Image (cartoon, one colour):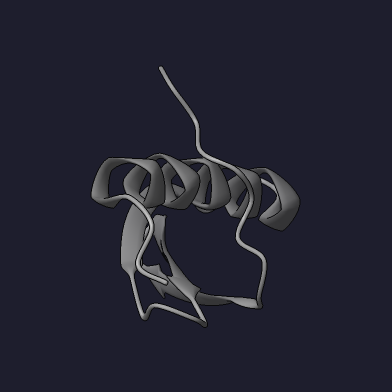
Length: 67
């Protein structure tokens, strides 16, 4: 898996519990690009945030530079 560089601006995270799962959205503040991951409710917030950030970095690398 090829990861891009970490976003230069802010990254926003949203956590929404859904039953026994947690929906985590990571949003790049500069581009508005959003990715979503799901994980077990028992997982630590830090682990889910790291997973979402890695997915966001991959997505940003796929779409290329927008600035």
